[in-house]
Image (cartoon, rainbow, N blue to C red; front, side):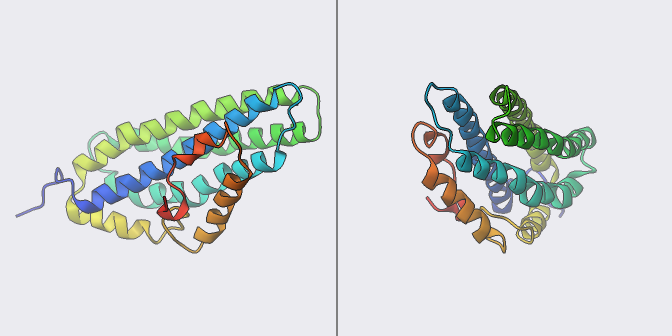
Length: 211
């Protein structure tokens, strides 16, 4: 008897939980970056440029070196033939490509502000808002469109294959050769943060899955 793809097995739950945990941490760091920009506008404020640089590095590197490769190389091919999956996957792949240009704008605006360029804080604020809206919409699409398609299409044995393939991709949240690098970066970010910015990140799942 063939397996039913509608069975939500433990492997599926673990993969979905992993993707959502990565989303949660990235979303909270992005929110903290927005809070940093708001705080930088306060009279007499001395921005902690090293903190913003660390958060920017996190959102530059983790999605492209960890999160997107998991999806592009493993999850997307697994559900490519499922009804309705093609357009969703195409949109997400294009968004993965588009994110790089937005991050370059963010980096350029940050460097301009650090150098004291005119109107640089306004440029950074606009770039930060644009990137935040883009990336939150992207993560919602994955959670509300892609993951339900995967849940409907994949059998328990296919989910087990996806889970095994996921662990071969460098993953700072759940252990890999890059884990220590990104764990140290995360801990550096947390050590430099003060309220109210710190509150945006504290509830996220930290690297290594520790509480």
